Structures are given as structure tokens and as C-alpha cells.
Length: 304
Image 1 (tube, rainbow, N blue to C red):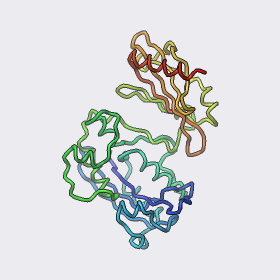
Image 2: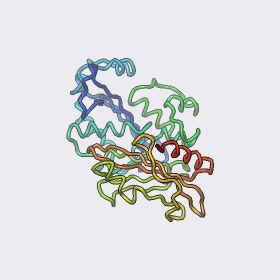
Image 3: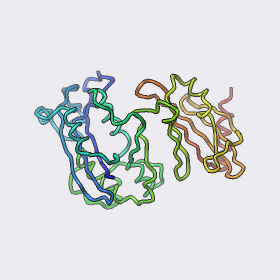
Image 4: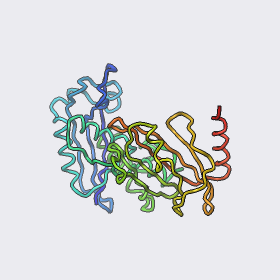
């Protein structure tokens, strides 16, 4: 299996009148292909002629230092995207700095009615997250240049272009310990459509569940699997100690107690799919008694 480490640069409306289906139009794709030993197998770099936004946004212009004239003779997005995917080959996993690039690639592909990358959630490596797990506090998300500085990687090309950022991301990826690589991420541009496609995965200190799509929030909150709280170590339902409550209508919390493993907190996040439906991301993790009491206090304050 190869690692396809890629980065995108995109443009947006300079007038505030964006097209909802494509708020960010990709104008550059850069990528590095690494083998299983993180040895370089290939490079990809293409500029793209924009079709939607004909004037460069001032942020795009200042960040990547490119002029519209430089893009006028380039190929269209569908042509370049096809070249990129052909270059990727058959057996690979995408790697990006943060989760946004993979989503925007698929959004641009959908706009041009291209064949989707996947019809269900797709595994990928969020190198920004892997860096945090491997070298920092597992929570903080840093800029790419920060990671390059921490790992003392030579800065031999400028940042903020698609290929250079892919190049540096690949350098960071190659420094990640093998033990961290089970912390993959899921891109949910194509949310699960059936119960069979739902995702359940156990990481070091938590379990993640990604539900199928529901028509609305009420339907999601009436689903038994969505509301269930199980200990992911002994796989048994736990005694519910704090019932489900929400602080903002998007995030819901509950807690229980496993006789073997202790206090457990469940968190639900409501997400809107690209098909304008609702799906749920639920995480379950063990917490201390102090954290349990703090959650109970938060619930008490929510009561009228």
C-alpha cells in the first residue's frame, strides 16, 4: 500500500456571492507518493484553470503568490483530478494535514459530476492529528510549519503552495512512530446509508460510532443504537447514571457506570450530511469520578 500525501490550494468568491455547491474552487493540487517504507515513489503537481470564480480572492493571492494570468492556460479541474487519481494508482490511503482537503476534493468532484471517491466513509490519515498524538498532547492541532520546526526538518522550499505543503506533510508523516498509525480518521463526505455501513471502531482510550443517515434530529434521537451506552471493553450495557442532555442542541452528553471498568461518558455530535440529512458521531470514553461529578453538575445547571 502507498501513502498519497496531498495538499490543495483553492480560490473563493471575492464578492461574497459564493456558489453553495462549491464555496472553494480548487486551483492547485500537489502530492507526494510514499511506499510502505516511506520512500519516495512519485510526485504530482498541477495548476488548474478556474471556471467558477474568475477573480482571485485577496487572501488566495497574498497567501500563495499567484496571479490569475498564470492559470489561464492550465487544464480544467475534471482533467487534472482524473490525472491525479490515475497517478494515485490502486492500493493507497490518502494523508492530509487536517481533514478539510479531502472534503473539498470530493466537493469539487461532485460539482463537476465526477465519479465519487467512495460511496461510504473513507479511512485516511490526518497527519496533523497523528503529529499531536505522537509528539504533543493528543488534542492540540498545530500549523504544519510548527511540526516542521519541532521535528527539525530542513525548510528547503517555501510553504503555502500545494506541492510544498504536501512535501512537508510527507516529511512529518515519515517521522511518526508505527505505534501511532492505528489512529486513522474517517472522512464522512459520503455518510453511511444503512445500518450495515455504520462505523464502530475502538482507539486507545475511546470508542467512536458513526451512524447511518436519519431524516432529522428527532429520528436520530429515537434510535436505540444512538442512545445506547456500552462499555467498549467488556461490551456490556452500563448502568445509566446521567441521562442524555444537551447544552446547545448539537452536542448531547450522558454517563454511566461499568462495574468492572468504572465511569463512562458518552457524547453525541449531530452532523449534517452532504445529502442534507442528519448523522451522528458518538464517542464513548472512560472518565474519572471528578469528571463524572463535573458532568453531573453541568446537567443540573441545565434543568429549568
